[in-house]
Length: 393
Ligand code: FAD
Image (tube, rainbow, N blue to C red; front, side, top):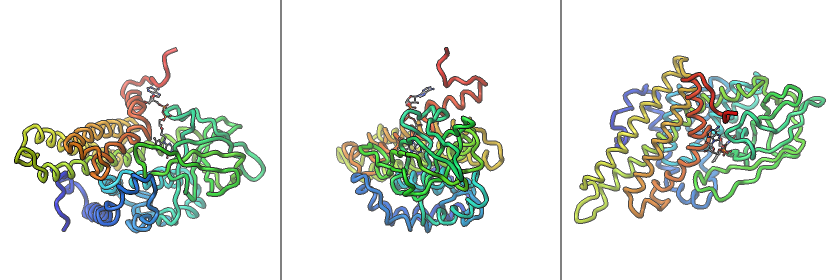
């Protein structure tokens, strides 16, 4: 019953189950009606539209593939296509959900105790509480396995001391998933810290040129006490964090796919409507060539993203697969946004026209969850057996 999706040229919908299709159109409908009209304004103001959280919560997608504990138990493809449909309208909105669901909630589901899952996941799934996920530090981004925030064992719990940077949702999150180095074992452990914990502050990072709606924060933790019951028992080294990242990178890959679908849909409409030299822009061969290049990019990106989902479902997906998917798809999306911006002429630099906003939003996506380079090196290590993250000594 929904208008045909012009970017769905190879009829990707046919590859979805009836439930996944229904979810896709439900998400698109809510995003088009409730979110699309306001996002350019909030993006310009770099404010978060808190009033849309209940509508996003009602979509029943937070928690993604997690089963039980009030979570939706979606297929990975369902979770992916829902992410793409959100990103098609607004990338920041999809990042908000991604950090909350595919990073924070997934970490609790994979690494939390039974009591932690029962206590925290049901309200997070309804989006009546919001979570963030803090790994990156001011001095450790790509080199995340070297983070310096410390966790020191004391009677009844832990003292967390250090800083985190760039943490999405952290300025208002009710629950913070934080990674810190155990001072006894020197390994990375995970902790759940509640909003307003004494010693904890999160200050918004200003002046971003992309994902301006997402509230990224600088977190400072000065002797923050975390009770033993809020230590994640399943995080005993950086490898446990990397396992969560490999799964969330599947979903992250669907953000640039959705953004590119939105760019193509917008450009297709624009080229048919706007006239120059007495003809629609779509009548010029150079413009058609660019439009078809975008169309080809979107089809290829969807198929790579879809294959990642299927490999994951079959238990065959490796970290290298996820990293290649994330890096390649994001690079193609960047190319798509640059050409799309060109096709809109002057309007291509106005955030009101979606393409300029999408162009800027892709930059942080290219960098977070492992930069293009780091993901390339993860795949490179897998296919050659040689790690090349550190300069040769
Ligand atoms: P650096 O690590 O300083 O890298 C700078 C450049 O050097 C990059 O081009 C990089 O690819 C390259 N480089 C670094 N090391 C190597 C190497 N060995 N070989 C080749 N090239 C290399 N983090 C969180 O924990 N939680 C969040 O919610 C979160 N949200 C974010 C949201 C936004 C908008 C942004 C921008 C970042 C977010 N991050 C988050 C942090 C993000 O994951 C880091 O920015 C990213 O890992 C890169 O780290 P860095 O910025 O310190 O860059």
